[in-house]
Image (tube, rainbow, N blue to C red; front, side):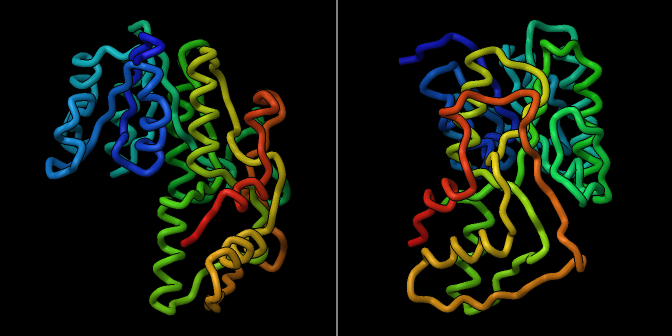
Length: 275
């Protein structure tokens, strides 16, 4: 039974994060999603629409579904992503609609000396971070009540690409990379989607940092997760990008969520069962 009539479209709903959001919201809202490839298992789901960011115009999908909330969890060709988000922003500006954009801690990856907060100025050295900044800047031109920028740190979870790669490395006796000098905060699919559900349910807009409210070293975090795998002796490969500690963390200060939606990095570790 749909408890709400709010119509939501998740763009990129066949990806790891997009699909997790769809599963969280579909029992509560009139939820739709896009998928890219025709052979995809979503093609038989009437709530899913095929959309290829490099070939199709997102406006056609938006005009067909007429969502009140758009969530962009889209990945793909960077140039195509910029055009797609430009079209989304123009659509949202003219329609009764909000746009929630899944951004990244990488919008701050040029700042290495301290964690970043919602109102800090973005600056990135990476191509990926600069892409996210460009799209964020598009959204910031919208009225505040029409957009939300959701900055997310590294995402884990039993079905996440990071954990799958870790399991594969262990099985194939290959090394698992850790970054000893990287200080970060983390999240997983369950925590992230619960937070997004809350924001949509309460019509929250603005900039949110959706990660653990404390920090850990990447090496310590990964080692503790690996200890839960069992009696394996994974090969650890330490990757040093700098001789000093480097931060890549997005902490909340201005827009804090309720206590029941806050969590620690230890909560993320405890959530993992790596069979």
